[in-house]
Image (cartoon, rainbow over all chains, first blue to last red; front, top):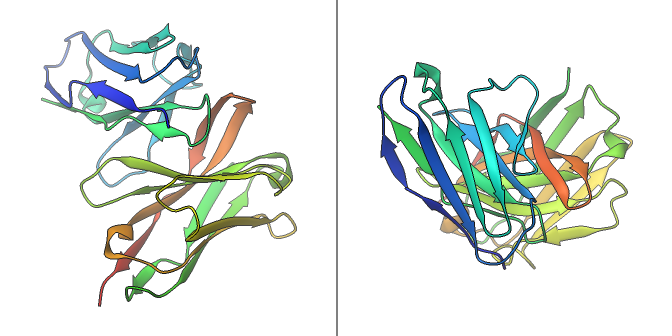
Length: 106
Length: 121
């Protein structure tokens, strides 16, 4: 199975900060990497698919990059509504797997 | 609008079975694969299973293979998760989600609101 490892597990930041979350795959997954945002008590929502494509309706301050085994999610200028938990997910091969999550806190 | 609604959760004793349902609306259900994902209390997301649009190809996480079965009824726009021999460690919110994209370039969107399963004596 492909293991997905996110870092950091938690991150303290302030409104207006630029933050980067990293996701590493245990073997190459090309660009078959997606990012989701989850707020407390809610279902996850898709942010980025195919490593770098912004899902419809997602603000442009979110961006994704990477290929192979190393991927990043960047939020260029944190807004209050961005404080949430973020997960990466590989769709390269089943069993599909998620990273353990990164909790973004004030 | 596209909507997924899970049902069937509840409290169940260890060793018993439960069947979850996920009803879909707002899109042509028979054209899309469907996933089940769970989240234990205070924990991260765990992918469980996927069934492709025709109901023939199904894949499972190792943690549930042999105990859980995913199926679908395209005439009812519903995907199911049959869970047998439940354990305390299966306690979680269970989400269904639609497969979007193509081939390996696929993602989960949208997600249902989830249904809580509690395994306890």
